[in-house]
Structures are given as structure tokens and as C-alpha cells.
Image (cartoon, rainbow, N blue to C red):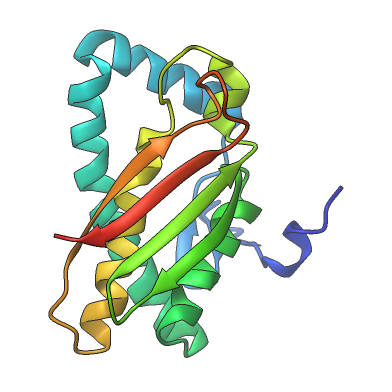
Length: 176
């Protein structure tokens, strides 16, 4: 069952209790706690407004993460995006698989299986993985800027496993 986690070192500071993986401080919370908070915020703001907030915050966070991890592990280009998908998968959000990536064109497709959100929401007839969308554009744009490319991107979820007829989610990254 644990083929993903052993490669991800976790250090806990004895004085502060702060958990760190690679170059970044981390939080460790139960899935139900996180998703229940997510659902509570969605109830108050509405899914569309919350998705917009999460896109911007996720974009910024993914950019920062990719920048720090690229430095920490001396990664460049597609290797940064692959490392990001691997680490997201290791952290319990779901299994993220790169279906396609082309840095020259600023495009990518990411398949999501076993989404933490779908496990809680179930088949509810709408996309519930919108928290991840900004992550893909933020990661792609950081990698593009680091390589000197002027291309900037936007990401969208095409469909999710929470919708009838789909057993996985699919996210598409394309140039603005």
C-alpha cells in the first residue's frame, strides 16, 4: 500500500513541532477535516466564487513550490512538473498522471485518479476538484519563466470522476 510515501522524507523539529519535507514546511491533517472545511466554505461563498479564490491561491503556491523544489533538487523543465505530480500524489490528494506535456507550446494534460474530494463528495454531478486547477497553470508558468519562455498559461478541468460517465478527472493547460 505504501509505494509512494517512502521516498518523501519528513523531518519534525523537536522545538517547534514544524514538519518539513524537502525545502518546505508542511501541515498534516486528516482528509475529512480538510474536505469538510472546503465544503463549509463552498456553502457560504458558492462553488464558483470559491473556485476563483482557490485558482489564484493555488497558482501562486504551485509557482512557489516549483521554484523551491527546482532549487532544492536541481531540477529543470519537465522534470520539475513530473516531480510536482509525484509529490502531489504522495501527499494523498489523488494520483496525478501526466498524459501530455509540451513546454514549447505551453500545453499539458493531467489525469487525476482517486481524488480526495471525489472520495468525500462521491458522484454528485459536478466537478469538485477545482482546488487543483490553478496548481497546474502555476507550475507550468514557473517552469516556463525559469526557461526564459514568454508563454503564460491557464488551466481548466475538463471533467471529473464526480460526474456520471467518468472514472477519473482530466485537467488541460493551454496558453492564454
